[in-house]
Length: 192
Image (cartoon, rainbow, N blue to C red; front, side, top):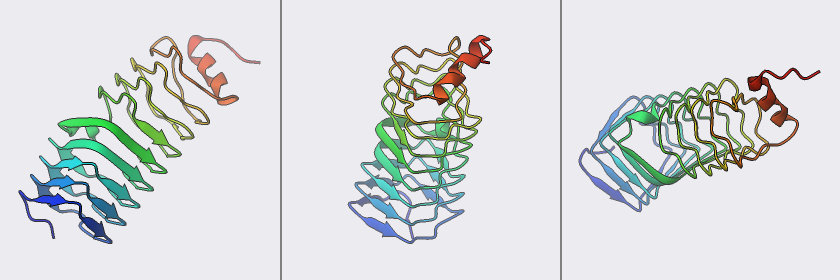
C-alpha cells in the first residue's frame, strides 16, 4: 500500500488496514486518514505536515525520528505511544476525543498543545513544557506531572489529575471545582 521514500500530498486514505507494518522515510503533506488501522506499525523518519487523523487506530505505533507539524487527531485510539522517539513535534498538535493513555511525552516541548475531551490515563508528562496548553474535559487518572511547566495551562472540566503544586510550575493555570480541591492533597493539607 505505502511505498517507502515517497511523498503523498493532499491524499485521502480511508478504511485502510495497515497494522503491524513498516512505513519508512515517507512524507505525508495535507493528507487525511479516516478509519485507518495502523496499530503496531513502525513509522521511521517519516514527516507528517498539516495532516488529519479521524477515527484511526494508532495504538502501539513506533515513530522513530518522525516529524509532526500541525497535526490533528479526532476520535483516535493512540494508546502506548512513546512520543519521545519523534524527531520533532511542532505545534499546533490537537487531540480531540481521543484515547492517548499509556503514552510517554517525557521532557517534550508541548507549548500550546490541545488535548480536549480525551482519555489520558497512565501517561507521562514529567518535565514537559505545557505552557498555555489546552487540556480541557480530560480524564487524567494515574497520569504523572512532575517538574512540568503548567503555567497558564487550562484544565477546565478535567478530572482525576494529581498535580503537586510544589513540584510543578502552575501559575495562572485554570481548574474547575470540585476537582481543583485535589490540588491541596500534594501540599499536606487534610480536607475534612
